Amino acid sequence: MTPLSVLDLVPVPEGSTAGQALRNARDLAQHAETLGYHRYWMAEHHNMPGIASAATAVALAHVAAGTATIRIGAGGVMLPNHAPLLIAEQFGTLAALHPGRIDLGLGRAPGSDQATAHAMRRNLTDTDNFPQDVIELMGYFEPAVPGQHIQAVPGAGLEVPVWILGSSTYGAQLAAALGLPYAFASHFAPAQMHDAIHLYRTRFRPSAHLAEPRVMLGLNVFAADTDAEARLLFSSLQQAFINLRTGRPGKLPPPVEDFESRLPQGARMTLEHALSCALVGSPQTIATGLARFIAETGADELMITAQIHDHQARLHSFEILAQVAAAA
Image (tube, rainbow, N blue to C red; front, side, top):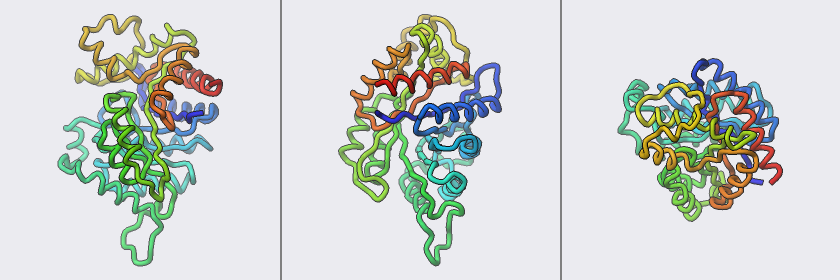
């Protein structure tokens, strides 16, 4: 069975707060652990009222302390926003507290708009330093040697698997060259998914970290007892996506009936393209779509995300998916 994992964007629904979103995150991770999901990841975003995971390492510490076996990690940390040493120390601290359970996914994008990037003191001309920063960061997880002047404490000598994240072929090339596992953001940017997978697998160089290529793909799953109920839940993500693309980011909207039918054709086409990697429906619909997606992509692992307004409905969606996967 293809392993299933959770990407929690820690949504802040309309009518709720960031604090409640973070409590929901811990509850979701505990739920996912019980259901047999392999990993639970958060992603770094800034200046987004509907996402509460900006302080990613801090939020992950809250979740890790409430779980026992599920792997916990970042999917990902936007490395150009940070000094590699600081990230090594943060995730080294997590690994020291929760040995053998911490992952570190690294992305190249800022996870914000340009004004916010400047507010974080990010130098926008340093994007091309990403490969060097990844190598530097990984070096801090190596055992310290005598005379080494700079160490990550905690961090040095700890096992923290590093993943490269991407939504284009750039990350695929880097992951292949470094012999690292690769996660593609097909849940919101599917255009280059097949090209990136092919490039990564054909150019992969075995390393001390990984003997064979390993591909994880993002997938939206909105599961409910009926197709109609699932489509209604899906409308929250559709609204949020349109709001973001039109410069109006906000909290996660409640679902509305027939949202797509109200949109102009251009907006509908945008949604159909950007959210094409989405399974929406009853258990049978999800089972059919899941089998097709795995067969078409050959994914080694799926990272499931579900921007559902009602927390209980979100838990139920992950429960349905786990049941469907177990029965396959």
